[in-house]
Image (cartoon, rainbow, N blue to C red):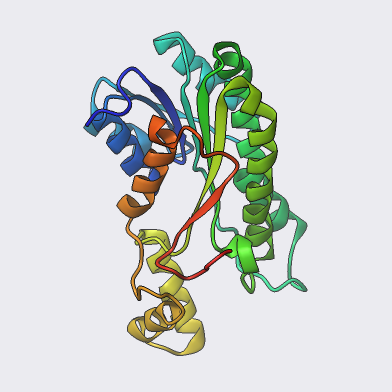
Length: 259
């Protein structure tokens, strides 16, 4: 199946974790992909594995000039942008609200929320509005539903993405453009492993004990793989989801059940 033949996608946060996997899966189904991240060596390595249908570039998506250059790369090479995946994110430093610093707060909001606005704005201006076609995907977190202790900065940013998604969907719907939000829970990545290790040490638990704690509220008692999340993202980016917009959809093994 080649759902994305002739389509051009931009994926931010494409150096590690979910980003390279979504890029590869899109390319395998016919897409041409622009892979952007701050760690250029890693994103170049990931793009090289895909081949000629991928462009790797360094971009700090909190900076307007970098975002413009990222979209320029897609437009110069392929003349269009069909899919914008706002996947870039940082966890910030864990702090109780009484410890919170403005630097930690602002830096997290900038990457996890403001960057999605900047990237969406640029692809809309440069390609999607004129062509009256396109899909924007934001990537939130289940921490944005009920919040997460010591992550006020991250939780607020991820909650904001869901509302941003609704506003974008309403504004661009008349142009036949869709916007949805993928809401992962825990994903089997190096970032999750580091968090489990760190919090296990703080609580005086083994890694296995701490991991079991994180699974207890999940209906399926398992952790999503990056491919699980990518499967949802690619469905929402495809024409099979043509009447789905403004939605935030969880992929979290039944941890948070909304509705």
